[in-house]
Amino acid sequence: MTLTPGFQGRPRPTGVALPPGQYEVTDFPVLSAGPTPRVPLETWELVIRNEEGADWRWSWDELVRLPQEDAHVDLHCVTRWSKFGTSWRGVSLDVLLADVTSTAQHALVGCYGGYTTNLPVADLLGGKAWIAHTYDGAPLAPVHGGPARLLVPHLYLWKSAKWVRSIQLLRDEQRGFWEQLGYHDYGDPWREQRYQGD
Ligand SMILES: Nc1nc2c(c(=O)[nH]1)N[C@H]1C(S)=C(S)[C@@H](COP(=O)(O)O)O[C@H]1N2
Ligand SMILES: [Mo]
Image (cartoon, rainbow, N blue to C red; front, side, top):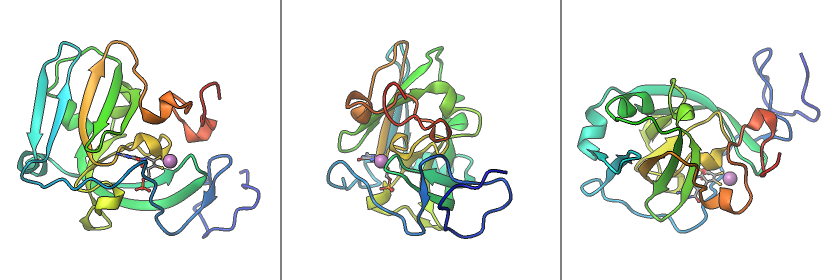
């Protein structure tokens, strides 16, 4: 196996390493492009809109009554920190998208507070993405996206939209906040897709 130069973190299971250009942290940094929105659970909702403009909506009560999953995943931020072995609980996007009629291949995720990010619909499916509301056994802290955030840990963390509110399914790709500013449309940490053209 290849050892990552300069790796100083805790021992990792054989074959598990940092993506290129990353270093390990043990704290949980906060990166937000604006203030933390406060979203009361009574008015919280998640909306998935398909390419025809039809909506599927879930209230907080409806979300927490859906089948829940635990996810134990590594996080990789484009600012080069990675955090290993984080524990989350939430609803798989497979569950939410099962009801939705769509053949669209692109998604634009929207948030309370106005942040957006884009990714392929395929990356929301197949057990790779969750609407996460619990971190380390406790309600997700507002600074980290509570009451709920998208969690797509196989992509750089800017795709894991905090305070998630909507997912628009689109025939044509539409860029989100960081993507419009030059960050990568896909953002695979293992291929070091930080900026457009990487
Ligand atoms: N709504 C929203 N989601 C967001 C962001 C943001 O500014 N607003 N920042 C993104 C970026 S750049 C990163 S690295 C992660 C940081 O998540 P954390 O603050 O929980 O570490 O959230 C992502 N999701
Ligand atoms: Mo980030």
